Image (cartoon, rainbow, N blue to C red):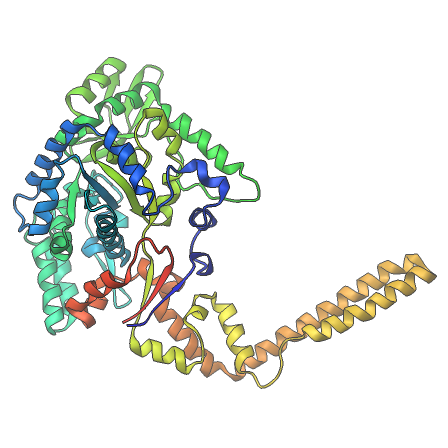
Length: 534
């Protein structure tokens, strides 16, 4: 199975912030604790081990065991849950929304990156234990982001009304969705497995959190993945001091805004801020609603409701009912690091970007900031597609180009005439150099006229070159169509495949071989974009 790598910067699909982070640019070093190298995990373990309360381990283990009560638990996962009691055990965490049937391919890449890193760390530090955690985003309320997945260029959509935390949603209506999906699969053994997997996840479970836990456990339980739903009172009790501080002082927004200004002022960069803090970065979660908490003078309002609290009342509410307070995107990372003995967060480019906005806030509240690792990214290419690329005499890297640039490159490559007018332009510019000298010696006022004529003639050559290129594209249109059709297959909707396609398309063809192939190819510490020919 051929595997190729290219630097993230050369893909054209990652932000300059992430590219500079991966290259350890000096201007960003204050935004993270330690860069992700195997050697740096030694100090990270020491720091986290000294700051993580021993008494939390027992409650964390009990909470996880309760969540696995109705699941078939693999020996590897059960062992991972049990050893979390031990002081030499740490977690590596990734998080993801509860996308229908896993959503896009990168759901798998995140989890595989996490499990593979745990294996690498165990080899490097055999006296320690490393547990891969999938943090289910059960408290999110953006249903429109998770209620579909793509299969064979069509959306499989779960249409229903939604409010509150998505993890609490009933699976009502998913039987009908499963029936529609099944019609598209056919009757092969792999199709039968996919039908069964969907049915057992979404029809045999009453809410989306339980369904997603079952699905992830079926795919990765044998590899020791531990799946966590943190929307539980017994876990949120450890977050009470931070909730009360946020309500009283609103210090997170002030600190993060200072970091945002710092990022914006870095010379010669135009980094895009991923998220901006609110005054209070908490939601109130109750009765199938999740609404912002807003403070006006000394009163706290729950958005879109008549519910209000005085300062004393809301502090008491946080003390007695921590489960009713839900961190937003700015505080969720803090909640994660408070309740887990975590060393590293593995996420996509957007996630790593907003984590980089948070380090100063972590320092303020005295919680160890984790190592940040960009998850593996990859494109899967079938052997048939790989053969097409070779016949077209192109490289896989060529298909990362914007469509116009790819068309132009192919046209110039196979055209029988030279479409590049660079030699003519150089010759013309040399002629005008002589005219400039002549103008200086005779009439300096003539220089402007010479410059105007030079620009006019260079523009004329540009126009001729574009017309010639356009004509040649028409002449080889059938060849270009083959190239662009292949590019659309590899980059659907001109996006990375991993952000669009669902794993079911590939499982239908490769079955049980798919996930082991991904495990063998996705190496989290390599930090390059993977091209995997299956």
